[in-house]
Image (tube, rainbow, N blue to C red; front, side):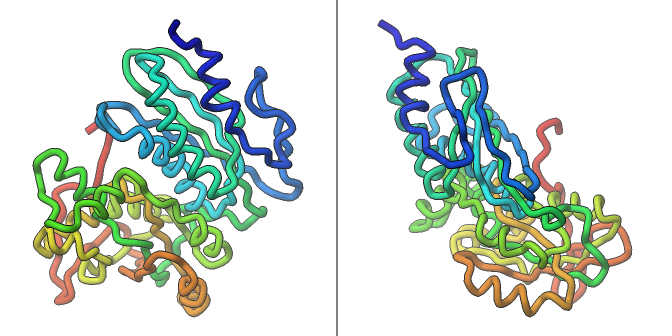
Length: 323
């Protein structure tokens, strides 16, 4: 007998729920009863992963479970929020118990690491796999990181090594090749991005603006520039390029991938000059790199320059679903 919607929910989701003190009622009713934290603002974000658009149909289900939550936690990190709850809407072509077991293994392993409780959602049948997850977190009033606070003179920083996930995608489409010995690391950057929760929390009161890098560093930095009404100069020689990226592409190709590849889920943020010493002390405790790549300018627009001052050109700034 085929599994029913309700038995799937009971076996794979309800049975694994965490028990956060701020959840009065989780999975199993028409809605969740949640206890918002006194004196805190609620941050809510939602991302969807669609088969054939965001992942291949044969993608590892455990990696998909991890990534579905990770991309939302990355948004919370970019807002300086502490993760708390999640809801999940899952559309599947069929009730595949093995797929669901592996998907939940990846999802709940990351949820446990960040004390996130799945409090509800929906499971239904459809023509293709769609994973839509909403995450909720908390931030003290006035301390949320936003895109609209960058000022001329602020330094521009990025975590990690953008471009690795883009290299994995380009390789999957036959447009690049990962250098021998680097395949596992590069593939993991695409399939299992690490949300920068700890850096995001420590940027409260330090960063003047922040965003997570999902569609490409150049394009996402452009969102900060437009919202803040400023411009920027980025020194492409300062981009933190990984050994895998440099071994796989020439220097200009690697820089292009770091700027426009997408799917990195790193943080790009700006910091006023008077706070840079505090940033450096905070970043020393992070488990990822923190690199200054440029500065905010009063003149609008994004300029990409080489060390000698010459212009570095990009054919495109990043990914756009409708282009």
